[in-house]
Image 1 (cartoon, helix red, strand yellow):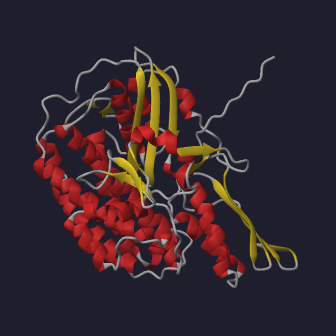
Image 2 (cartoon, one colour):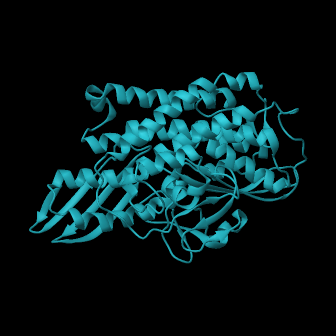
Image 3 (cartoon, helix red, strand yellow):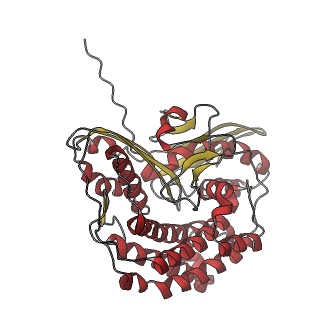
Length: 434
């Protein structure tokens, strides 16, 4: 921070630490008024939608998985569901359960990474988890053990921990036996105990007094805490099917960032991710996860984004619980994937990535060749809300020393666990011809 002139301060964070990808922050303050806030995503566009054009439908799950090394399953699930929607097929029964189990693994490993290694150091005043581990080695080791269990679920079902290779449109390339899945049981029980400890541990953190009147958006399933399916709902009246997404959401190009800003056409900024899921689907959590939330003093509606670290811990309890339930009821399906013939059409898919809803839309021809693709990641959807938070958060803490205020601004961004690399793959290409 530096003083450009009397009563004017500028906060510049050239590289945001402990987030996926490369981003920056710019804040200008005059007197007691915040006059400018820019959450800048400068990582170059990655053009995944363009890469997909002309490729076969069957390549979409593997290509889109490359968008993110932390939540590749979410991309595989959204792309597979969208293609299956285009072809008029539905994956059900034990194949659907196996997909749900795979998603449990991704939530466990992603949430453990964020809770223990990326977010928790903020509440203890450490620059990173390595510094924190010097004073709290047992806590960091528990987080690593939890993440390892999530990785093992993804490895077993997906074929490898990063960019798994076993998911295909219509199901899987290989279906596992019950005996193979049983090898995860004891590890998941231990992981669930660690997740319960995480809920109790994070509940004791010192949280800033900060709440906003957010519009929370998440999937809502009739019977389940949402992973792969459901309607899109909000706490302010949104209630639509996934194929209606483009009628209600719009993306805007903003000059200072390489990620599109997504907003609701009717009301503007909205909030996706664990806090939105928790607030809109609390009744769908397992009894143990609900009990853990209540013990932590957490119930819907929670409007403090800093408490998202508790919610992520509650969701880890749920993911372990749900994984154990699925394994207990699992029987190997007769075939690893349902047969189908590709047909021309447009398909829509939306799943709950660890960071929030991930929307895919594809248009394909009679041979299943991709003609057009649209992908809207969670960070693009939260980006406008992150900026809005900073506009409201900074005036409450103007009396803080400059370095502390700068650090708190970064903390406010990390509440959302933004995946900047995921967000930078828009393509707007105009040609003027005479």
